[in-house]
Image (cartoon, rainbow, N blue to C red; front, side, top):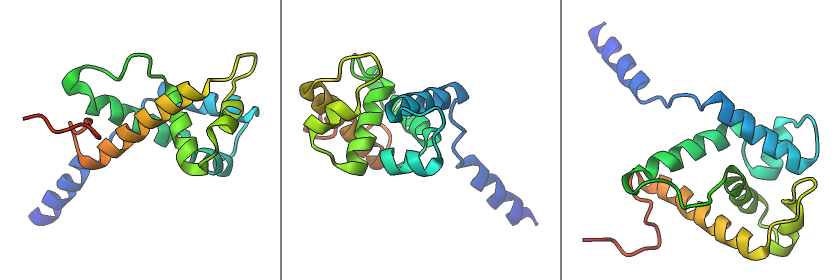
Length: 144
């Protein structure tokens, strides 16, 4: 019985906490804005971004946590930039097409240069999550 309790507490200690509800709502709202729909099904989220807003929110939290050693995310990083990277990884569209796809209502579309900068940045950050905590220097030579 004691070994069962030990393994159960070990299992629970490795669980990730749920994402902040406000953050999940923000990612859902941003996705609905891009998809130009009031309600979006899970299938539509996954088809367009490769995942649902709750996972987007958790990825954001993990990326922020992974960057705590040297401060915060790169200046100007926004939720929508992570969303751009996820859409790019899911669909692999041409950047010129993506500038139109990622345009928000009543706003100018992002430039190709802006898309490329943030897509590459967040792809590196996502890769760093696979490497483990504190490994956000992907693509940079290791410091001694």
